[in-house]
Amino acid sequence: MSNQISAIVSQMKTWETTEIEDSFLSTCVYALESDPSSSDQLCHIVSIVEQDWFNGSHRKAIFYVVKKIVLSLTKSNLVVPGSISVMAQKLLFEMGYKDECALVDEVAASPSMFFNVECLEAVIPLWRVKLARNSLKGNAERMISLLAGEPDQKIFEEEIPSLIENQQEIWHNASNVDKKDDDWDSSIKTALLPLPTDIAISTGVKVLDDVIQGGVAKRNSPYSSRLIIIAGRPGMGKSAFAIFLATQLANYSGDIAFFSLEMPKVQVQYRSIACLDYLQLKEAGQLVDPIRIDNLRLRSYNTSQRERLSGYLEAKLVKRLHIFDKSVVGVDSISAKVKLLAKTRPNLTAVFIDYLQLIDGCSGDGQNSETSNIGNVTKSLKSLAVSIGIDIFLLCQVNRGVEMRNDRMPGLSDLRASGRIEEDADIVMFLLRPHYYDRDRDPYELAVSVAKNRHGICGTLACSIDLQSSVIFDNATQWT
Image (cartoon, rainbow, N blue to C red; front, side, top):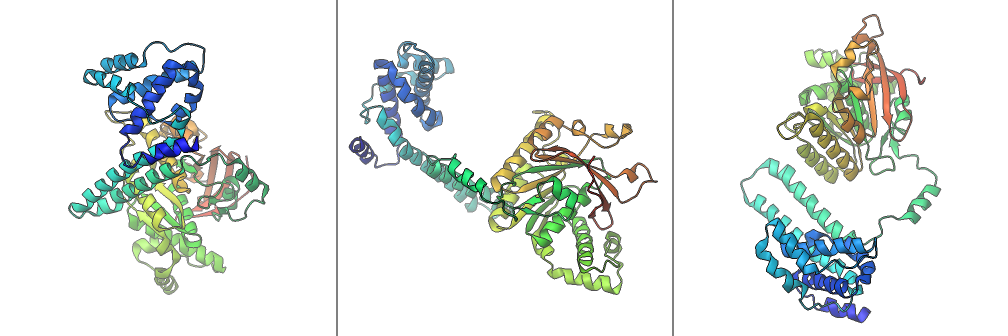
């Protein structure tokens, strides 16, 4: 057999695939029509091959018929229901490809380079490489075309990285597709080892860490790739909550991408500086006169505040917190920015998006409903989290109907397009500041309801929030 396979491969000196396609199809047709029992051998082979591997509608039609017959025969003892060529021609005729019907007989009767059915599987890896070469070539030509045009920063920052990623994916699929992808041995051996202590990064709020498996997952750790929803009505502190987490992570752990579709970049920066100042003073045990958001807004500082503010020019936060405002509004452009950061910043730790309904394409349009469009966005963001191996925090508004209830804590049904968001999210948290509705309540009180937690428990945790510093405090560890 090895000599036969070597003889086949030795004939394949060009990048053309038509000879492989015709030989593959003619071998399948001959095998099925002369010996239907060969369908057992063909079943695995045709499940690997895809219809898009064939050039021309007539070859695609023959393969479609072959695959359908193979799968039918393996389920029952039926005989081949007539001539495969006739069935393929009928299919082409019905689809409007009448001119290609005559080509079916030529392919089905063409001489085959394969000696038997077993040889078919042996040539598939080389066939796949040839197909990948064509895709790589077309993708590269598209890149060259863009680079030959007028200089455009958007093309350089968004379209080129996307094409580079496509090249890597095409190559990866062609080079790794036959490798074992269900490595049970490795998974079981890993599970027998002690759980690493550094797979999660603390948020700085213990009760929150307890909920999300120790904190924000380190990139490509066992708990990473989560889509985490932070939802609530306006004024509940969603942005402050996200800025606190982003500041904490950027200053102490790694790079963070923050997409602010509601506030200008400078407002996010001011809030993050106020948060950083509070955290630094608290860490030093000297929580006196922290820089507040109003200080920054009014340019009003005492001497100590001004000195600290000047010192933050060299802070890790400034170098690691990458803020994008309304210039990046679509899910495709968000994905392109994140993927570019992931390639240039190996310590990219998490992504924050403020907020879902402001992402371009989420509202209803002539093509799809709001529910469908929002679902497409959350699905894309979940896929992005998985492909990069990081947690994505997505802020979200809830329906105003919650304000008509006595208990104003939202639930999953209060999410707009709730079914799609709930389906894609790993964790859904709702924020409620009781003081917003009842001025007699503590203005720092914050309740966080974990309504969905794919890998942990649900419930309501109590903590505190300081909006003037965008800081979240531990308040209690009691669950209800």
